[in-house]
Structure formats: C-alpha cells, structure tokens
Image (cartoon, rainbow, N blue to C red; front, top):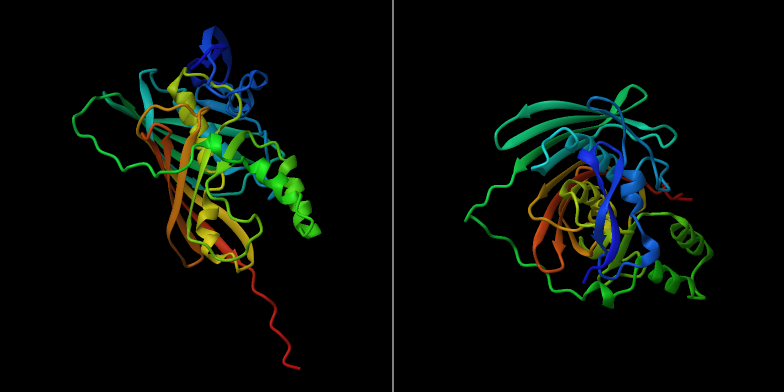
Length: 330
C-alpha cells in the first residue's frame, strides 16, 4: 500500500525539519507531490525565543484577511512544541478576536498553564501589530486505554476515487456556454488560488445555484502532498488547518437567496479522538443546527475512510446580510 518516500519529521514541533530514514508514500499520491507545503512552509514556524515563534503565510483568501485555519494550525504547532513527545492534543478552543493582516508575519506566544501527570494545558496568543488576533487554549493527554468506547456510524457515501475534485467541477462549469461572465471570472479566480488542500464534494450542487439548501454538506478532504505517518502532533496541526476550510459556509446554505455582505468566524473548537493521516482522504461531514441573531453554529466530523471518527469540530460565525435599497413608490 505504501512505498518509496523519504521522511522528515518536525523536531519537537519547534519549527524546523530534519531528514530521517525512509517513510512510505500514501496510496494515490503522485511522485511529483513530494512534501506537503503545509509541512515545509505553512506550519513550519520560526523559533525566536523559548515559547515564542513567528509564522508566515502561504495562501490568502479573496477576503484579504488571513485564513483562520492557518492561525489555528500555527497556534497548535507552537503549543505542541512545549509538551512531552508522548502527549498529543485532545482538544483546543480558539477565539478569533481580530482580522489577520496578510502583509506581516504572526507572532505566537505560548504560556505553559499547567503540567500534570496525564494532561498538560497551554495558552497561545497569536499577535500582530502588538495586539492578539487569536487566543487559543489547548490540552494534551498521554494515551490511556479504557474499556469505555463508542462512536456514531460514518455516513455511507461514494469513495473519493469515484468523485470529481473541486477543480474538476469548476472546469466542468466553465465549459457551459450559458455561464454568465461574472460567474466565469469568479470561477477562474478560484482556480488560480494555491490552496494546499484537495477537496472532493459529495453530491455537489450547481456552483451558482441560489436555491436554499439543507444546512448540511459532506466532502472528502486531504492535504496536498506527502506528510508521512510520523509525528501525530503534526497531523493534528494539519487537520486544524483543514478543518476551517468551507466549514462556516454550511450555515449559509439555507439562505442562498439572501445577499451576504460579511461572514467571519468567531470561535473554533476541536476534539481529537483517534490517530489519522491528514494526507490521506477523510470525510468531512458538516451540519448547522441553528442560526439567528446574526450568528450561525456549525458542527463537523472528520472520518477516516475505514469508518473511525478521528476529529469533531465546532464553530460559530457572524453573518451580515446586505439590505436591498428600498424600492421607489413613484
């Protein structure tokens, strides 16, 4: 199933890589993919002092604000660098307090809140212009086997090999001669973005269908390139990056007939349940049970393709609807 690649692992998650012996290539990965940019660039923090790191940017959304998943993933890298190797993250809770500036790096300051026998707690501030843009609490746990186990059943969906990628779907839409120029330009911009994630939607709707839909979507997702089965801390950081992509938009699906003026994440939480490979396909099941008072709440589950629930996510965001100008009575 796996063969042939070299291994690099993040040394204590402190922001630099060292080559080690041979790793194995995930099934379906192409030789030219090599190392994922999420490892070599996005999550490769520069250590400045003890518990102080600097992170750079790779992909910036069209909103010109930093991608929230990048900030959460980098904050987790900084926190994970300060705990023993045998401890892995089991939960994180973040608040986005300011929009990120894509023109300057982000500083990550770690506070060692508690070191216990089984659990360690870290607090991280992501800082730009001297003020926090994100605060994050993370908890790490030594593995402890227990007979108390259960989980939901994974939804039955087509395998990723049987689905079109988001890029392939866009190419399909662009071939439609009836596509209006405004939408054609928007799709072309999406294709030009260097997003380090592969996505294959399950039952994708028409890209520009504005009919309201159920607040639920599913898609297969994985990091582009090879990460390897090394440090589980690294895969959790990559999953933190991936988990924020296309997540909050689930709450907007029943309201596609409205003109959205603004949408932004307020907080983001994750719980890590089982080992996984972030460079192998996982099913992201997203659903929104509630929206109101200019906010929407979304829950998500990342499933391994063998049916194991790997990660649970939750996020609340703010939604501003553009009011149409009043019609003249004349």
